[in-house]
Image (cartoon, rainbow, N blue to C red; front, side):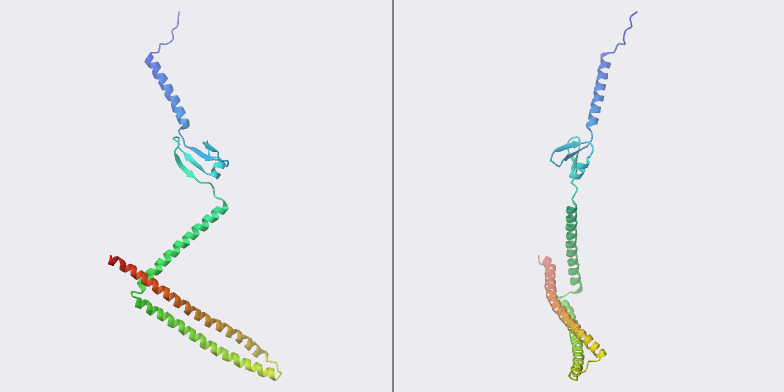
Length: 222
């Protein structure tokens, strides 16, 4: 008795073959349907890899899609010197921005504090008078100390002419007074320097005030 194999119709056979082909194509596509890493080694050679090697992480790499489109770019790791330079550059840029902001705030304070140039001049004159008073007070104190020092030096000279040693308390007082006079002379010089610096600042301040006032007037003239 002969056994016959099941008969498969042609339509069923074609459907099976298409299904098998589709499954194989899906498998092949799935193997390529993912992003990859693109990078150059130290010698400049191009590489593609599924995993990110340490060398690529150090030298920099790109993440590319299956279609070859760059999705992400990662620059190479910076050296310690480059990081320090970058940090210094950022700090410098921040300092410059802070300075610009501070100037803007100072301009705003000056305009709000002095509605007119006469107000500004009045304030400057008051500051100048205060500095002059400080100089005069320092000079008066200096003259008094110089007189005390002169008296002590006179006593020291008298003792020397009499071939006597100046008593220790007076010797210590003389040394202390000499230092005090020197310090007071420096104090007078500092006060005078502060006044001269203020006068220079007043000139710049007035010039800046006029510039700011002119900018406020310009839009109304257009």
